[in-house]
Amino acid sequence: MAGKINKMNSALIGLQWGDEGKGKLVDNLAGSFDAVCRYQGGANAGHTVIYKGEKLSLHLIPSGIFHQNKLSIIGNGVVIDIVQLIKEIEELKQRGIKINDNLKISKRSHLILPSYFEEEKEMKDKIGTTARAIGPAYSNKILRKGIRMGDINSPDYLSKFNLPPEYLKTLESFRRNYGHMITDTVELLRKMLKDNKKIIFEGAQGVLLDIDFGTYPYVTSSNPTPGGILTGSGIPPNTISTIIGVTKAYTTRVGRGPFPTRMEKETEELIRNTGDEFGATTGRPRNCGWLDLVALKFSSWISGVTEIALTKIDALDKLPEVKIATAYEIDGEKQEYFPSEVWKLEKANPIYKSFPGWNNTKSVKEYNNLPEEAKAYMKFIEDFLEVNIRYISTGRERGDLIRV
Ligand code: IMP
Image (cartoon, rainbow, N blue to C red; front, side):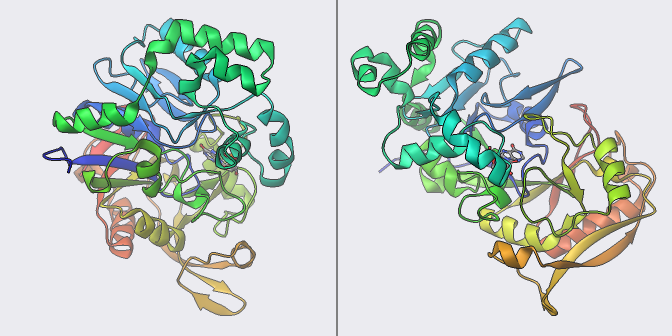
């Protein structure tokens, strides 16, 4: 029995195909928690945070790192590119951000080995991956061929793997400089929950990229859904009380795969530019579309979402009309449920509800100051999903956030 522990922890989950603005939310919310924990994915993530006016992209380190007295934890479910991790630590340090005892990395997290990048090449073209060798890292883990962070403490153990000498040197240098960060994070989290500390779990990617529930095979290789928190951090299932589902006020997608609500070219280009829709990890232009409530109904159900964070509403400013998909038409039939088959989704024609546009939500700080048209748009989303919108992001700055 666990005895008395803190069960009021939170999770922040992307409800779309990633890039929902989770980084900004975590950065804003971290102040109310004692630790931020990543539980899946790897350096394929690009969590953008505006720090002292500068746009910074975090790939592996949790977005709570800018709060000096909070712990940042990389759980066992994350796959680690050690070269990228060193780069990220050094870059943050150069900006005067303290990284020392405030970053902890699970001994059980798997390393992305140099040979995995060769394996990745095929998938980069097929799926449009981020080329971060995420698929090979998870598949080698499942094949039981992987090496884990805790293993870098034993040169004897490593010698069994025929690793390139350069890579061994990198591992050794990491161990020397940052070895103290590698720890048993299951025990760390247990102690924190026992001490009544509060944790927020930071999802990477989104539900529609989940290996089980996403638009397979055009997905990533981990579980961004809350199930991933349990296997990717080792906390008991009954310790999360709040699940914040993050969605943009519209939809974006990078990489290949079906995208039923994609906008026609002209509007897409407009949104891409106003919303700065270019990948934080790869720089790729993101495809843009209208909000898809068929997909969101599914992803918020799977995630057990208790509240919604709606981001980038300001990117829709000044459009004469905004649209929301409420159902699909597939082979002449109306379908309200998100299909599991990618070939069905490829044929889906969205059935839209149209809303009058609005002029200005940019940097609005109070709900009451939002245009009535934007409020009506959000009310429709809440009613459809049967979940309240708790946060509205109105711009890229830290303070551009309404708490409803
Ligand atoms: P992978 O995760 O690099 O294997 O890529 C698989 C798919 O997930 C591709 O379509 C990527 O574009 C997408 N993807 C992975 N990470 C992210 C992310 O953080 N944001 C958006 N898309 C992502």
